[in-house]
Length: 61
Image (cartoon, rainbow, N blue to C red; front, side):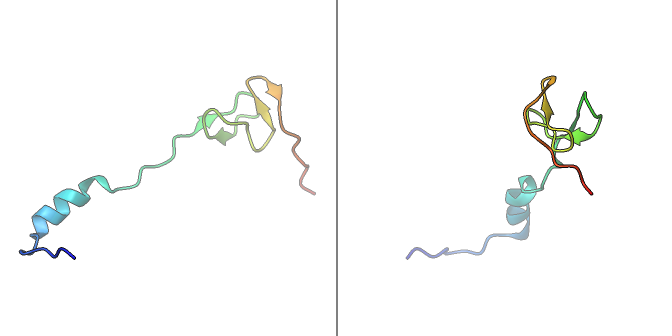
């Protein structure tokens, strides 16, 4: 197996890891119930997508 001949510096390691940060999920507002939801997906609260109901959502009792 290949092994590194020299140790990578802290700056080189940090530069490589500079793009590893997580980004927050972009959320849009449901036009029906105004809850936050992922874009291009049916709303988990009301079950609507593009103005029509596509999921049956059970009522919380």
